[in-house]
Image: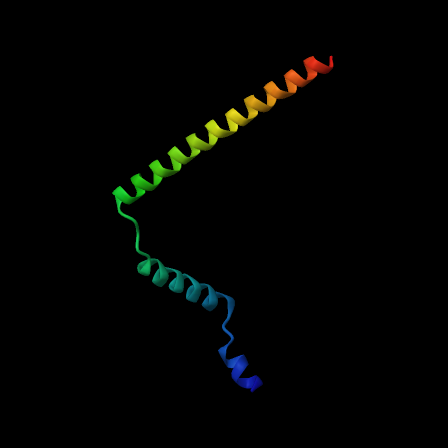
Length: 75
């Protein structure tokens, strides 16, 4: 049993070559998106960011106004 395990163990150079060979084989199986899909996804991300920025700005402004109002009442 131990002999079979030692026979399969490769030296570092052979393991590295096998790794890059496996990476190359996997990269050939990848289904890359088309240009319109990338553009559409990018637009969705940009619009989502704008919506979140506007929401955070609104919440920040409202909380600042609330804190200012509370400090003027207590002041």
